[in-house]
Image 1: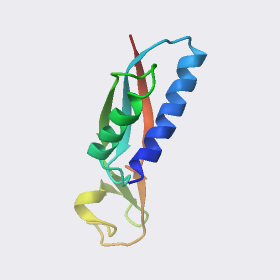
Image 2: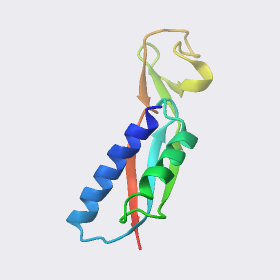
Image 3: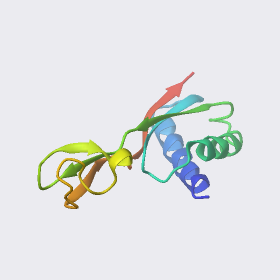
Length: 114
């Protein structure tokens, strides 16, 4: 379960931002998680609850997750398409000359303070 390691990095970054801005308590953290990031949102929130409650700064805070759709681009026909629905080969021209544009992000979008 790599979600616990990810939570430790999120907590580290939130603590750093809070210290830089003289924040005493964080009420929530909003994350952007890509649809194909390999992160299981439920595992991430479960790990968050366990780890955040061990920190005074984060005790009781909520982790909110926005899932970002995965989009792939075809280098042959130049069109974009939904990665999860169609896979690696382009549904428009059947080319395997494709690459992921977005959908594997793991980023802190917002830190909410009391």
